[in-house]
Length: 347
Image 1: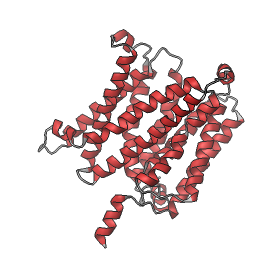
Image 2: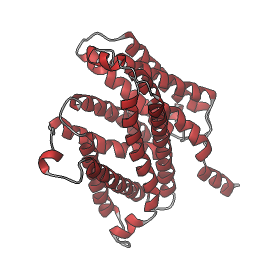
Image 3: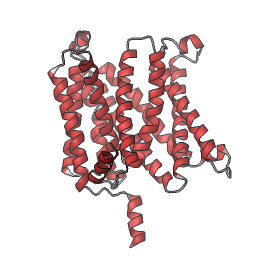
């Protein structure tokens, strides 16, 4: 197994990283499994009386607590914990705001659009991420990379359409919305916010890794992101509940599966941050796409249920896109501003 990982590391170059280490491959593999498990657990809690916003609050709180414990263990003691967290904390504000805006815009899109337009527009982040990375991070992508991105986008839309081709979704699919423009604009705003937020996190993590201890900067950035996300999620929850919080309403619908979902979300935050820092937001999207393919196909195979042809074709497209992206990494030289400075220093 170790030989296989080493050979793979030598052969493939992921987007945003010219030399792939075994730890990076393991991190991407864990992200695939985490995303698949998270999607499956979320689907099992959809019909429960459970507010997803409370899950976000608890997962961010768990991520914040874990990050603070790690910072205390790793810190050299010259700076107080509060001083450490205040350093460049503003870099975490914008991503947290963008993700909050994306969640709000996506809820508008879900209530204003039919199923197929909603599924199609929900994947705009996959296309906008490399497009924005070209301008903001000076990353370069080949035609094969763009082809893989478009293929994965089409595959996810097909797979989602096939997964939702069941009796309980027939009514939703046949409902016609006479004013879809607000929903379209909301979904475009959501996709742009997610793509831009991911790239802001990528730039922040990579910049922090060059200025302080790598491990310490990683947990400091995660603590800052979790703190800001927790604040905005709490404000959203207070606004939604009209500033009334009690234990019975907050934990309504909670079960062991919900707590599993909360833990998976918290671990996913660390895995995403690790993979983004080691590779790029685009590579992270491909890993999550692979996790999605496993999540929608795996349960059907295990339960020996009928598989919709659209779902099967979509999964094949996603898997082909992931392989195509990895192969394209061999001939791609991805350059960012920090790497340019290093090259100039050598010359």
